[in-house]
Amino acid sequence: MLERIREGSQGFWAKAILGLVILTFALAGVGSYLNAKSDIPVATVNGDDISQSSLENAYQNERARMESQYGDAFANLMADSEYMRTFRRGLLDRLIADKLVEQTAAELDLRVSDNQVKEAIVNMPEFQLGGTFNNDRYQAVLRQAGMQPQDFRDRLRQDMTRQQLMRALVGSEFSLDAEVAQTYALQQQKRDISYVNIPAVAFEADVQVSEQEISDYYQTHISSFDTEEQVALRYLELKVADLLDAVQVSEQELNDYYLSNQDQYRTEEERRVSHILLEFGEDKQATQEQANAILERLNNGEDFAALAKELSTDAFSAENGGDLDWFGRGVMDPAFEEAAFALAQEGDVSDVVESAFGLHIIKLTGVKPEQVQTLEQVRDEIVAAVKQDKAQAEFYQLHQQVAELAFEQPDSLDDVAGLLGKEIQSTELFSRTSAPETFAGNQVLNVAFSEELIEDRVNSEVIDISPEHLLVLRVAEHQPQRTRQLAEVSEDISAQLKADKAQAAARQWADELVASAKSGESIQSKLDEKGLSWATESGQMRYGSVLPAAVVEQAFKLTANSDANLAAVNTAAGNAALVRLDAIHEAEAAQDTMLASIEQRLSSGRGQQLYVDFIDALKAKADIEIHAVQQ
Image (cartoon, rainbow, N blue to C red; front, side, top):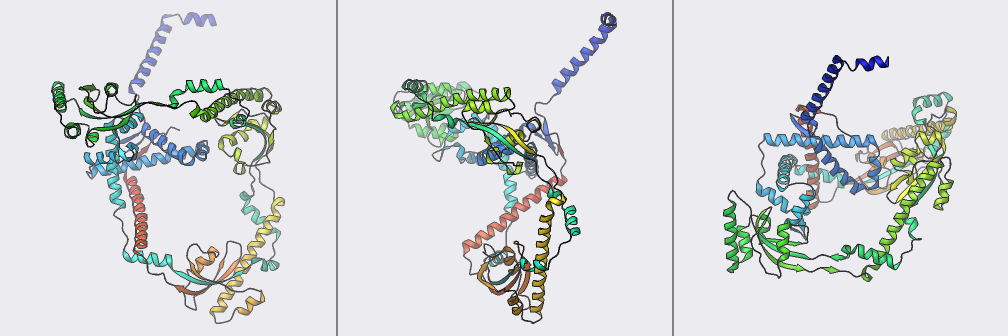
């Protein structure tokens, strides 16, 4: 059979069919390559695409901000795929909102001038040194971000245009003086409150709980009796810091490190220059002639700063007489840098220098010579660095050995413990939500609760908590998630039902006292029978009171009228309480600054809500298509 197949595949028709198949695949492949988009859209808003790269940029920026603000806490969240999916979708929603606002701003023909963009750039802290705009820093930051100045200006203009509309919306909200005054009066009002705490325990003797009630409660709340899956672990951990004390450092090592890293202890020469820049126009020869003329004027004694301010096309530095502040090597355009560092003395002026930006005339205004720290000056720093390096090297070596031993002897951590010279540590049973700090991150929890470790009872792979901290573990005990039986929780349910019924009885008794008081009867004798008495707190405010929250909340609902100044409430402690309003103290006269603050908060809150409603309205009438979002 195989021989027939071989012979058949050599025939004319077989070769023809094979050729057609190959050609089809080739054309399909080339076609898909030519037609493929370099940046697949993740969403389309009214016909405008939001690219995958835009979402990725937003993701990277927001991730960097979150990591900077929350550190390891955010790193743990990142291990949760569901959280990161929600995180990305939230960013996409924000980009969609931005796109809608951008489209609306365009429809309204909103514009931002070149001067506004320039002023915004000059005032950005990212581009300042010592509180002053620095053109070199501006160029360096953009290069680091992989952006051209024109691209950055266009993006900034777009953002500023969008902000125009946002400010118009948010800034249009205001609060009336009467609203502000009323808010202040309510916030600052004080009340004298009397209350009686009625312990539910005093009514427990009259409470009965049946088996049927316990069973009904169990069935109704059965999900609350689910236990969490739990594990107990045996583990070993190693940190670079554990190895530092045993590290010895020789003089030769210190000297070698100093020589190998001498650049770290050298402050390179820096120079400060001013320049006059002439960008190339359509006529390069004319630009050259203009530069030569300016150089001749300088040689004839005219002021460099004045000519820079008048003639330089570098608008940012021209405002400061052409000053570019301090810079070292490797920052400027190579031709510019070579000319600047070739100038011998302060005040020297270069010939006309051509760079990628145009033609320059450079004046040296300052020199900071190179400085080198001696070994003795940085000895302590080098000792710490060499120890850290040696400890880190030993850590990496042990990391490999731990990984090998844990794998080769999967049923025990004893060999790993012997290698590290450490005692094996143990934990009590814990769930994902009650994990000890060392195991609290999703990275470790996913390993500790993995099927492999639980069912096979083997050692884990080495877990890198950080570049300087490793962990290897095994499951010592496992308790799966389950629903506790009624017999296990019957006593707890009975206690809960008794507590609920006792509080209900206390509240009913309190309601009866309120009804009696409103009918004109004295309730003091009934309070005396239970050994209860009034407690009075004067000058209580709506927020920040030492009284139970339910008592204060109820007191601020009551009026000072004798027929409406008493009420009963349940408290968070499981008791009941009688609340009586004794007096109302109106707020003192407000200072203008306080009223202004309240007005700002009210208007800001309304403005933010207005913006949310505005975005919702735009989304409701927009044609929005969400494509697959890459995870």
